[in-house]
Length: 294
View 1: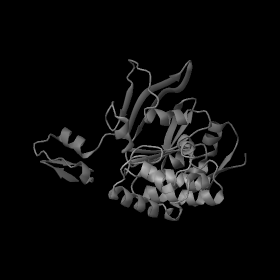
View 2: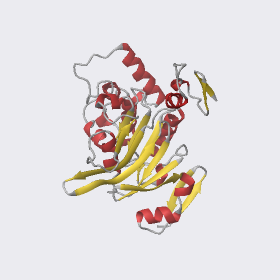
View 3: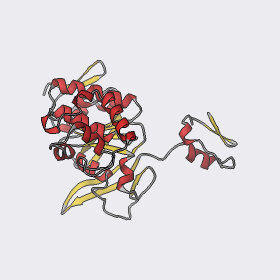
View 4: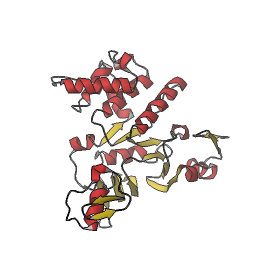
């Protein structure tokens, strides 16, 4: 228990949220101790023409959580990410819609970048040009595609060196993205996403096109990031993408979330087979889960 002013708040162990006002009420102290959810969505619907991309979706995700969002192709997973990043906006309704990030309804995109790091196929495709890996990471400070007349400071250089070492890609820093394998290029995009020390890293189908060696390396990288304290939101259709640090799994189909629970509860043959419409078995090996028999 941590004391806040004259009020003891049970379970408050995070010094980042200690209240400084000794006259705080218990309610105010609780709010100051516990941050608002990272994502708080309720009754979110997103359309494109006559098609519903997201259909009455509700979810709450807290900072520091490691989560997998699992669903078949076309289920709305990428649209969900684009809703988080404000590329898509929900329809306004009078049905209790909530669309908040960190307790706020309105965000500047530049501020979101320091809160959320995004790695997607669209971004990787954009960076397939004559840009070195080091320049890719440095470009994250400016939200640009490469460097132009940007002023790179010594602090930015030091941070880039730190990320290169952390991701174990410093030996590739001078290589152009067009000369890298898919897995190597993806690690530089992760590095770019980490320049602002985001609270959470969001990955959209991150292991697509990776061979076995690249998959092994990517898993190790992601586990190191999770262990460093950065939250992970993994959006995927592959069960084997779910690293051991992920404890919560959300199932998505037809534009909405329909199951949400612990990894052990959700990853069963009956549940996952129903999600993908096939008969299968779930096998656990150590801390990893695999689908077999289909």
